[in-house]
Length: 330
Image (cartoon, rainbow, N blue to C red):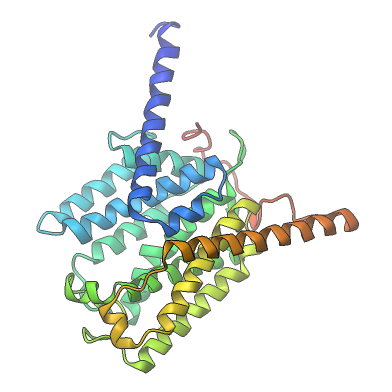
């Protein structure tokens, strides 16, 4: 390759990267309003990375939920293999996988998160009724590790090329896992009728196709409330913009949880509880106002006390360079 050809090739590669990012953005825009609203509070880099994480997760979910059929397992295996290859090489002919791999390489997402995720997706093809052990394993792989992927994005959003990947501390990890678990369990409740009737899946241990009893629903709601409380306790440990985005999404799911708690068990089975767009916007506005007030108080305390919030990196520690620092840098 000549010196003249190199800039042309670099420009083409950058165009491919941008196109892959746009593909992931389109997936998020097409499938989720609640998640999409939260991402708007992030900076451009973190927003692109979260869109990439969401898109891969959504595509895998579509394979097992929408496509299904005899070839679903093979399709999921191929998607997992594409993802592993792209995470190693930094390139994929699948645009969604390409965008995810760039994000993973830049932020330190690895097999520890990706492998359990695909294991849970694969379980959807074979496991119809969960006991407590398989339920916890499924929630970890399908949701808690997604929370950990998002956490890696948040902590490394402003990481410079060559700087070691930032890793979370234990308290921040616990909050991220709890957040993912709460979101998943709320969605289990919202999709209870469709999961049981259309897909033949019963996620909540002991809850049959007829839906939960009053006592079972109360116990599930209490469990979700505990998860949300753990997630909320970790909020101050997140970088500022990530904190605002997660707080907004938490507030939306608090609203969903309250609506579910006010819904009789038989209606939970028959109706998917939703938050209307005007209510979502109202929740978002109130959350932003609260975050702005907290930030103003923090700035005032920093001026008077001479210290702030630790530079905005949240509950992060500095890890050793794992050799993937610059592989996905734009």
